[in-house]
Image (tube, rainbow, N blue to C red):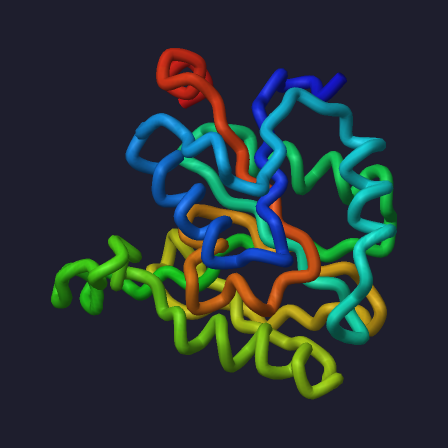
Length: 193
């Protein structure tokens, strides 16, 4: 079983609009709509890996999105996927945080997505190259210096896991080959912080 005992929601690629509604409901701690075509269950990572491998790839490099509330196990799931599938690169949405001087100038978007991240840079440095079949090279964020950091190149053919809060926002959702929502109770998330 998955070591963090987290609940994972398999968001349905066939019905992205329903998956987006599910993600919004989970973020707001609202009850789930029973008619959603999404399976929520405790599971093991071998099953997730098999599901990823069975899903038809949309691009030369598989894009896997992992989202959830803070401390819900997103990074742990990504790390476990990488352990089981060596040719995996993990990109954290935190790498696209704006420097402090650029944060807080805008209100959140209508769907609640934080403007404190440079989503255009994520689009241009990660999603656009994958869609065109090009190599992915993105600039990391240096948290200590509060500036853009070193450039990181993703090996061609690797699975690319985009992990972090807002990773499954509607802007990027259609690009993913596979999506995972991590959920953990509030009490468990607080213990992990």
